[in-house]
Length: 137
Image (tube, helix red, strand yellow):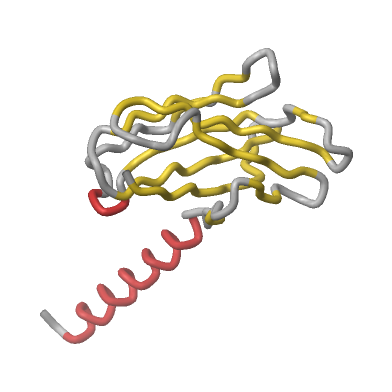
């Protein structure tokens, strides 16, 4: 292969990498159960039980500055094992909103190890917040 072709291929690979990195949103690690969504809203998450093999329910609540529970978003979640990326990917699943204004997502834990749930909060169809919850089973 000529040096010119080789150089062009390298430049194309670098350009593709830059475009890919701009397309991928940055997921804020949710290391505490309470997290800031924006200057007016915060969220709290908790599991129905300590994550273990089987199905656990992830509950997310959203509150305004006054401490009132609100539901301005549609939220989706995607669970997977980062160490086995794609092997146990749930796909993007909608949270269900119950009558108590709680967003609920069933999460199927199929094997022990490291897990991550990626959350996307959307308002009027546009993503406004990306968060990630990591835990071990």
